[in-house]
Length: 223
Image (cartoon, rainbow, N blue to C red; front, side, top):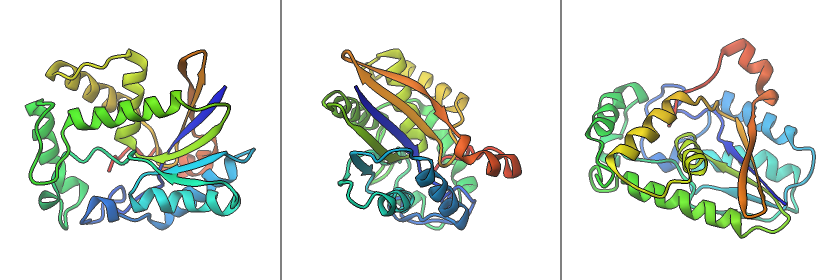
């Protein structure tokens, strides 16, 4: 049986409401670094593989786990965030400033819409989700920690729970509704098990963040 943890990165500059530039270069805040330490301390056994997205905030989140388990191999997979807004619409803007553009994107509900020069379409993001699903099915008896992002995690869970491979405006609207209904805090861990040709969700873990969540509330902002 293979075990996979999907781990959302710690609080980023964008999550904290700060202006940001390139999505790949958004960094963790001090609070995000504390969450990353809590994630590393939560492990009760050494993972066989540590995976990050290409984005700095997942690499920073993973760094404390990497330091704790220095002999564990590390690799990069394309599990980065769903960036449906192109870079030219994001430069030096906050999450709140981008919200009207984000709402307009989802309202168009076009799964093949590519916003600007480097925006990712919904269909392309779902393809990356399917690639991750295939990677998990190829695992043997391994424990893999995947440091990734909120929207991508939710899209993965939707595909897993519905077993849907279709891409359409209706599906896109359903995924959006699912994303809005499922809070995954920064540093939250979704635990998966692959067994008997099926991937099973064993739960969302936030107990390692409990004290922080009591004092500051659930962090649900996604970026």
